Image (tube, rainbow, N blue to C red; front, side):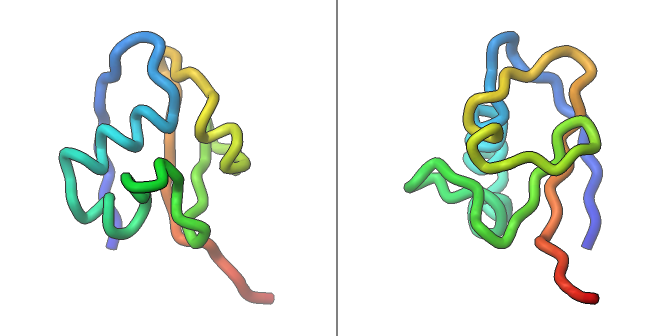
Length: 79
């Protein structure tokens, strides 16, 4: 399944805050991507920030700016 959504965010919000907001508004995101109880991205999820894979620590602290792009994907494995 693929879904594309463009959202505006308030100034000064972190990627974590953005994902928390999405998870509150869209329960499937809370079930598959972001755990509202722990405030963390699930370990099987990869978050890209401006087309680069980022660590979970950056997910929590990085402030979003105008034009930033967040992509959420399942972790890929293979060879």
